[in-house]
Length: 168
Image (cartoon, rainbow, N blue to C red; front, side):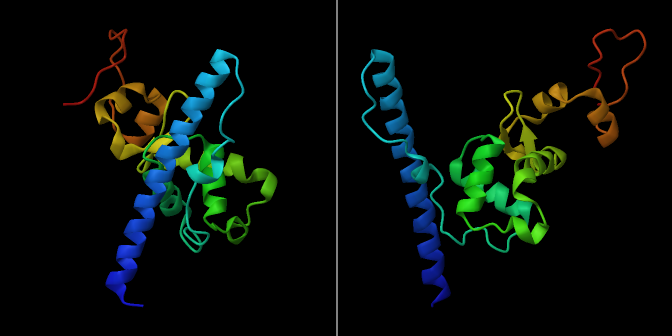
C-alpha cells in the first residue's frame, strides 16, 4: 500500500477515534443527567467507543510508547484500569513481557509512576502525559524524596519551614 495513503488512513482513524470518544462522553453525560432525574439511562455504556483503536494498534510496541499513544488518543488523564483495557483492546502483548494477568494492573501502574520523564500521576490517581502539565506545579507537588532522587530540587534549609526552596 502506498505509504502516503497509509498515513492518511491512520490520521483519519485517529480523527474517528476522537469523534467516537466525544460521542461516548456525550452519551455518558446524558445518562448521568437521566440518573440524576431518576429515569432510566438512554444509552448503553459506551466503553467500546472510548477505547476505539485498531486491534493491532499497540502490538509489538514498547509499553511506554503504547501507553503514551493511548493517552494521546484519549486527550485526557486516565485511570490505570482504562489504560490497561485500552492497551489490551489495541493488541498490546503483555505476555511478551511475562506479565501474569493478575499482576498486569499493578505492574502497569507501577511502570507509569516510575517513568516520570513521560508520565505524571495526578493527585486523583489518574495518569497523564508529563508534557500536558505545568512543570513548576509538578515540581511543587512531587514528594521531597522523589525530587531529591531526581536531583531537581535542593534540600530545604533548616530554617525553611515551608520546604519549598527551588534552585534558580
